Length: 470
Image (tube, rainbow, N blue to C red):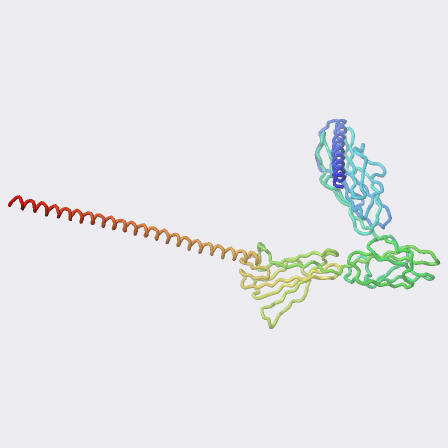
């Protein structure tokens, strides 16, 4: 399997390289027929017409692509369009006449990737037009919802010889609404989800439908397929059904009636259910107060994974006196919320994020205003307009303690080293003094020996002298 995928990638790369080579070669051939007149690389544009519209599922519609060369003689263009293949499918990428003199490659499209590619050139001096029709594309609307058709960044308008200069400076886009086709079966109603284009948090939808005289029964189905079909089995003889705890998302209720042993057309009813609140979030103070004014900025934001955020509501609680907590009224609020620094005390800012279905998630932050220069919050501390999260405060305090301990340890170590050196010196001096004492004692011993020897010699000489005198 890996070898097969590798070969496919290599073949795809080879194909792309060949297309690029052929495109460049085709441009060179086209430019070789030009008269070589100077060009002015002014801004060109692509546009889609119409830029909007409403179409039913199963219907087809056309869009036209125009080029405005901006007063320049254009030698070649490349149009790359992107569309949503889940909502649209291309029937044909080119219909009718076109200003393109020669297609460098046959127009191509992919209904899987949602891409249309057009590459064409103009012979001789090129083309200069303010509204040249490049192509008419026919689409089929296949599923309901809003969708867009836009130009990719790879689109180009080229002037000049050889590789050319891209003078494309602006493009527009088309936005279209695809709505379900008119019902072919019984008309469906829902008391719990009356608007098919609104989100609801109730995940227990109920449906009813008009009575059909002579109907034997009805077959229904609830799924996520906008064009789903119930089977040919009677599920209920009544005109009412309810569901419990269905999954969140966009669902479709399909219904058809059996009358005189023949099944009629199918009706479709869309329900959008979101029973989950937005993601949890925590309001926070502005990291660095750069805006003028004597107030705090409290920021808040979250997202909703299904229906999206609709609005926020906020209120402020004054907790300075636990026996008399004062709450303001809930009111719509945009981020950031401004809180005056002149109001000293303990406050709790509470904000609720509501999604399109009415679910909400609440976030809160507690703020203690000691003075305008010192603010304590549940998320950190603000000093002179600069906010520090508690983890930074703890980290800084830990670093200070660590540096202090290191300084004290280094000081003790230095003192111990100094004491050791001093003791070493004193010991050396004492040892030297001991050596000096020993040397002095040795000299004294030698002097005593010499003194004794001299005394003995004196006595011997004295005795000889006395003998000689006698």
